[in-house]
Amino acid sequence: MKSMDMAKKPAANAQTTHEANGTIRKINAKTGYVLIVHGPVNSLNWPPMTMSFKVKDKDLLAKLAVDKKVDFGFVKEGDDYVMTTVK
Image (cartoon, rainbow, N blue to C red; front, side, top):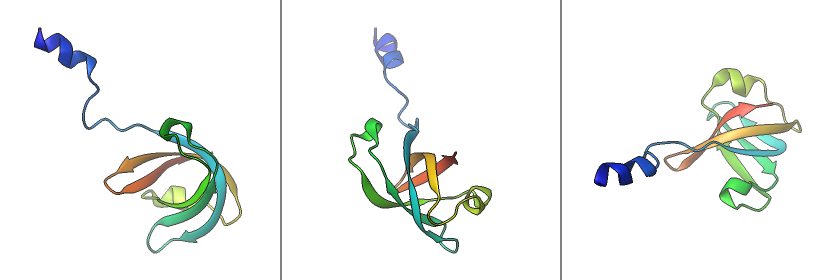
């Protein structure tokens, strides 16, 4: 039965939230991007690296500071990796 097979597949538009920890190196409030040196991201099989993340939520952006260590969550949206949570 085809309907049973479809129930097993994840939704095509479902977003997976990934988690990492790192240190903020730069903040560009004008563009809404932060540069972070982060540890490995196991859910993506990524090694530690330095990369930029988009921050759409201006309230979240206001909580960030250069050299601050953070645990954060992010999702992929189009070509961007978007920070969604910070602890």
